[in-house]
Image 1 (tube, helix red, strand yellow):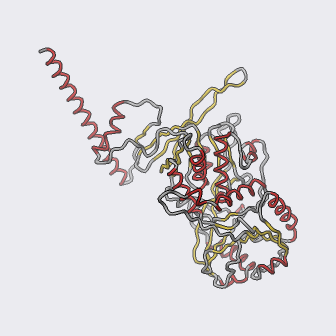
Image 2 (image 1 turned 135 degrees about the vertical axis):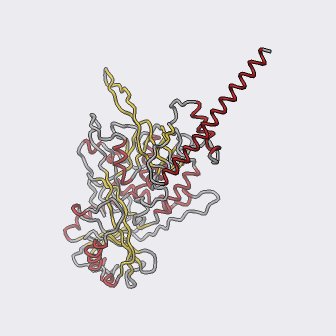
Image 3 (image 1 turned 45 degrees about the vertical axis):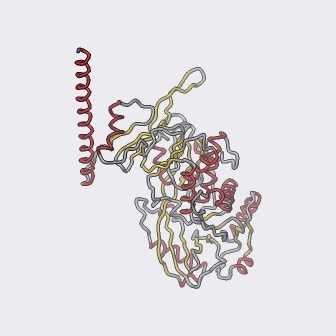
Length: 502
């Protein structure tokens, strides 16, 4: 009898608890619906935070999280849009981030759990998507030559690397037309030294005299020109959009986790680091907080963090605590967005199949776009006339006042051209020496940079991805030694100047 009474009381208590639990679930669902309505009318709501892995959570909160979708008529799933823990977080899913993920997943897929976090999932503002897609071996620094040559070699065999089972083979539309750099008389000796260095590193670059240029390109006006350097193999342009999506498809096949979200916080903890006979406190990055489009904020812990944020890499580095002033952490990451314009013109009588990607002495460039008499062109503004980067609006006056006059002077046929369209894109501009910054930060050693290419990211991304994989797996560079491009050069005040900037 007493046993029955106790059992009845226990069942009644359990029923009361379940009733209260169900009411809380309904209240939560109702609260979420109300929050959604408030968000729709523009009221700011505090985001629900899903903590990262390793943090203790109340059992009731876990049950609410798992069962609540049923009451909201949503599909119930235990998989979160942002994982609570991963091995490597790649911050940015553009061409550089995709390349890093590709080499990590294809070379050591069973060793690392890789997560790519990208806020612009349609890549509408991605630097690589808005670029001209050019690739050249003509640089003044050997490492830059080697990185572009690595990309050229990869693109020769990209279908072998990037084909995915049950999908059509990828197509990146590589046009092997070469780059042509023109030089006045006082730059011929420098151009000749660059060609010699490029050839020593395996590039197929040739130096053309003024008479050779006139014979090969009769449509050129050679006033003020004494020589030119031409890449005869491995140079040209391709479709970076197709390359990014091919890399992404291959990465997903290799179990890379792609997540859409905006990183709003990079969490750190203080650890004690041994230093001779004592220890010293140092901050270490432990995770990121990501705002998802579903209105929640997710915490994700990781061991390594790779900054592939392009023009916004400086903001991410600041968020990670770079440049806060501690010993060894005095300098910020010198990367900022710079806006560049690209113009499309139509010229029915312009140079056709023999037209290379031409770079004039004025800094103006052009290349063919298709076979219908269309060309894309542009130039970098002077340092004191950098445009505002708050939006992607186009300055058509820059074309009228600077680009078109220089273009029409160098190629007289372009006097009969018409501007058809234009767009703007961003460079991840290294304000110190306009060169790549790669490798771990000397203070935050689990933060790895892949930034600051200053417009060369499209042609260097694959080599950068390979280099970072080698740093993580071998703890040293194997394919191309990129040690000179590490962050320490800013601390040591030894910048690396690249003079072949377009």
